[in-house]
Length: 208
Image (cartoon, rainbow, N blue to C red; front, side, top):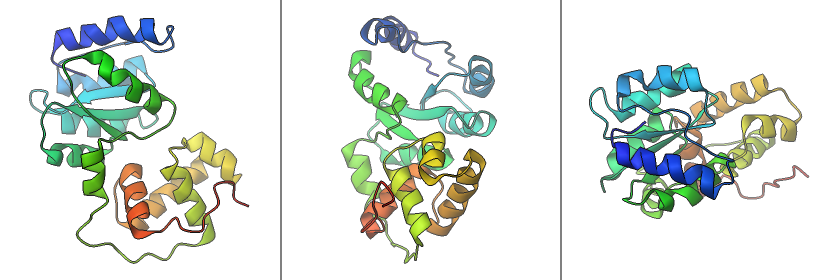
């Protein structure tokens, strides 16, 4: 969702050509209020939301998309240097953030990484997330550590369910409980907090 037609047109032309038609733009709008309904109709794998869209704005668009189509990966995008909107977007449910550049092709590598299940954040923003004012003391059991490590590795809900030998519904319930325990709102924040606090130490990605 972006209110700059030339930028959107650039993505429409570049994505199919560079990805051998693996990725393409299936819908776009410059109206933040209609973003969630557009995503619900198109059901893309990924929704790219410009945080500087006109009112009600990109943050509310992120929250609405996350609420109505939770399976869609939401990536926030901004041309400004202020990290505050990016952090707000992550708290609203965005699973990644990309700085908006004048050349759409510069976004393609991180967008493809996000489609592959990775969370992508600029290094400056990541450093900010890794330096919280207060790092909570959290005691995690072995199962919670395995779940947190899978989240930090960018695994999807389905992949985590297979890894932990539980249902997707159980993974969602476990993830919600873990986020509450860590006092964060999104998977990206949980992964950043875990790395900073050393909560992943000693965990084995294969569960052995």
